[in-house]
Length: 614
Image 1 (cartoon, rainbow, N blue to C red):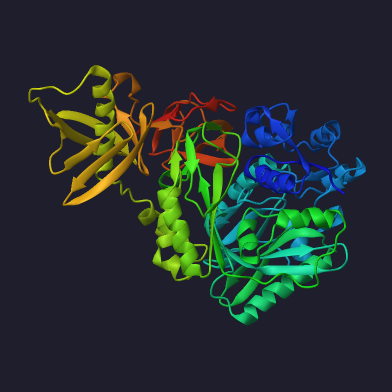
Image 2: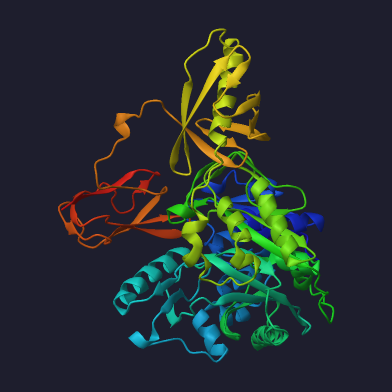
């Protein structure tokens, strides 16, 4: 009987596993890096053990330290979560060798499926060894990875060597294994997967299908169960292939078999020998707790002969601290508030007041809606996200809402090329036109209460400027003996925390929250701008500024001040939140400054380089 579980992971998945453990009466143990010393998963656990350092390679990828932590804390079992060491056979063996229960598949099964190249061989599929023009486009993938890291689409043969080098470097950084391989790239296919669950008594469940086609940088954004629009025959084929993969390696526990579906044909991608981020949609549809079942299987219990019956439809959206309109740049800073309406499941590793750092994935939370039909579930999730209070750095919330309401998604006709086709339209700024005025009136009402009321005499209109979604907005308002006024709008109420405006006979309430220069008016995020720009913040033409905080992990070979560069030429690579971001020359010209050297940590907006145009 398991009495104490250490989760060898961080953030949302650690909190998720702890929740089930608490309900089961099981004591919980967290591990945390120095960067995560005050993280939610470390705070909610019954005990926590420090892993000195911040980088994953020094902390969460150190299986030896995690096993020692489990023994020191008195845990009798280890749950790997997902990511980091969850698909590391040597770690699974080390856990068992320490006399601990491993809540996962046998190390031999992990080993057989951990390398995507070996998994394909097991399923009778050979990777590309010699790439020709006729094979293009192709996909470079990390053999030991996931989550889109170490993955590159190559459309020109001349780019292959550079992309192989970049993928190897990213894979080695993320997974400690730089092996990559090449396979055909299925253009605009659907990403469909099957959840499996197997016990030690020979029973294997295929728990329906999931569609994960909406992806950015090959990382999933919106997932749902069941996958819409599949024929009964194709669904049965996917289930059979998934069970076949599980039985081929004597699988035990929870796992996922992934496919690309195109023209009614299923193409095997890989088997993930762990719980997936998107597992909540399967839980919602089947009415089960996969973590609880993992625990029971690890204790030797048998599954029922047949899985439970599926009911309804579930949709999950991943909320990221990132700017989709700016190359998906990850964002950092204080998360002041995170709340969704009742009836929506929110799995998160953050709460109000937590800081979002640069060291790990930028996912803040997963929001899940379940309903009798797909249309109802999609509508429920879109409405909840639209109303959610998300106060802090820029997020992908607006993108999620627009994606869920896009006709291609609502009709179930999406594929993995969705964001390639629609990103520009989905990220077009569309701020609430009344939000800047509401923010300004809330601010002046705060100051008026502090300094003693309105002026008795008419005054010149007051002006306030805000930045909203990268655009500047100027608002004008005035004071009268009866209160605040604004042209074309009736001010029904103006208080520090709530403003009600009436335009064209319709009243609009705004809930206001202020955090320094940042203001949230309902779901609109605004930044108050100074009346006069600070001249010291101006940069020379051709300046390249860091789009996010991070570390310079590579500099182009031979690049020094005075070097001539071509427009679009990669100059350096910035790593932030487990992703590499390429910084390229904006114009053809001469590199006149390169203050960001290899290994330097930079803040958002820091000067990286200056290219003087020819």
